[in-house]
Amino acid sequence: MKNSYILLLAFLLCISPAETGAQVSRLVEDVRYGGSIRATAGGGDNAPFWFTANRYGLGATGNNTVMGRAYIKRDSESDSLRFWKVGYGLDLTAGYGIQSNYGIQQAYIDAGWKMLNLSIGQKERTPELKNAELTSGGMCLGMNARPIPQVRIEMPDFWAIPGTRGIFSFKAHLAYGLYTDNKWQREFTEGTENLYTKNSWFHSKALFIRLGNHKLFPLEFTGGIEMACQFGGRGFNVIPYGGGTPLQDVSLGGNIWTALIPGLGGDVNDEAYTNAAGNHIGSWHARIDWKSRNWSLGLYMEHMFEDESQMFMQYGFWKDMLLGMELNLPRNPYVSTILYEHNGTMNQSGPIYHDATAENPQQISAKDNYYDNHVYGSWQHGGFVIGNPTLLSPMYNPYLTGANTLHHYYNRVNAHHIGIKGNPCDQVSWRIMYTHEKTLGSYDRPVMNPLYGDFLMLEAKYSPRKVKGLSITASYGHNGGRLLGNSNAGMLTVSWDGWIRKTSW
Image (cartoon, rainbow, N blue to C red; front, side, top):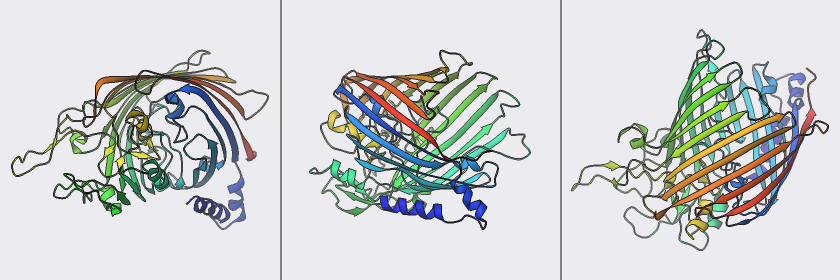
C-alpha cells in the first residue's frame, strides 16, 4: 500500500496535464520543501493530552518520543489565476515511541477546474468552521486521527452564486476511501477475543451554505451538514444480536450506495432487527460571524448524531452540542485570538434502547452510544478517534479499562475548553490550550463516581528573521485528575521550510 502511493504520485507528476511543455513545466514551479524534528520527554501515567490529541495520529500516549518529518508539496493555489489548478504533496515520518516507526503521512494530488477539485490520496484536512490552532476538534470529522486515503470530489472553497453579489455561496464534497489500520487493529487486540476488522471502507459527504458578504455588511451566517460512514470489509469476533458464538472472518456487507444513503441494508449481526449497513455518523453545523474592519466575533455550534433520533429531534430539542465562541482582537502585542468551547454529550437521547417486538411494539431509539459501534468497534482510525478527542480514543483503553478493546467507553462528557494565542512580534508567537473535562463513562459502562481531567499546554514559537524558514517551538504539557492520571512533559520542535523553485511574479 505504501509503495503504491509513491508510484502513483511519481507517475502523476511525470505526465502532462496538457499538450504544451510550458504547462508541464509549471508543475515544478512554486514547490516547497520542509521538515521537522520533534522530541518529547517527561513522566507520568500518560503523555499530556494536548501532546497527543489533534495531531493527525502522530501523537502518542507515551511520554518519551522522537519523530522526524520531511515533505515536499505544491499548493494548487499557485494556479489561482488559471482555470486548471494542480497541487501535490508527499509527507514522510519516522520516529521512536510513536504509533508507527515510519510511514507515509500524506501522499496526494489535487486537480482542479474553476471551483471544482478532485483530490486523490491521503491528505490532512482541518475541521469545518473552526479555528484549527485552538479548537478542541470537530465532532464528526476532526484532525485527531491519521488521514484516510480517498478519492474526493469537492468545492474546497465557498463559491458565490452569480448574480447574488456574493451574498449566497456554498461548498460541498463527496468522498470514498479505504482504512489502512488493519495491522494495528490486529496487533492491538492480539491474544484476546475482542472485535476487530480489516479492509473496511470510508465514505463522507458535506454541504455548507453561507448567507452574507462581509464586504457589503459585517454579518454572515454559515450552516451545513457533514455525514460519514465506515462500511464493508471483514469482521472478527463479531457478537451476534442477543449473544452467541462470535462470528469469525465474516463479510460485513455494505456498498457505496448503502453508505451514500443511510438506512439501506443492514449489518451482518442485525438478524430480524435491521439497522443501517455500516457505522454511520454525522453532524449539523451553524456559525454566525460579525466581521468588522480590524476585529471579528464568531459564535458556532456542532451537533453530532448517530441515528435519526438525534438527527431530526425525535426526542425533543438537541441536548448534546459543541458550542463555541471565537474572538479575534485588533492587532496588539498581547493577545490576538480567544476561543472558548463547551462540549456536552451526556444525554445521547436517554439511557434506554428497545427494538420493537410483538409484545412491546414501541421502538425507543435512544442510548446513542457516541462513537461506539457493535460491528466496527469505534469511530476511529489507528486507535485515534476520528472526531473530537475529548471523547477519549480506544488507544487509551488499556489504561482506562485494562483491556485492548476497540469499543468506546468514555463518551458521556462535559468539557470546557479554552484556547488563546498571541503574536507579540513577527518573530514570536504563543498559544495556551486548557481543557477541564468530566465524564460518567457510558450508559453501557458507567463509572461509579465522575472522573475529572485537567489538560494544559503552554507553547511558544520563535522564527528568527535572520534564518529564513527556521522555527523553534517549545511546549509544556500537564495532565491532572483521575481521568488520565498525572503527568508533566516538555516538547521541543525544530522545523524548517523553503522553496525548491518559486516563480518570480
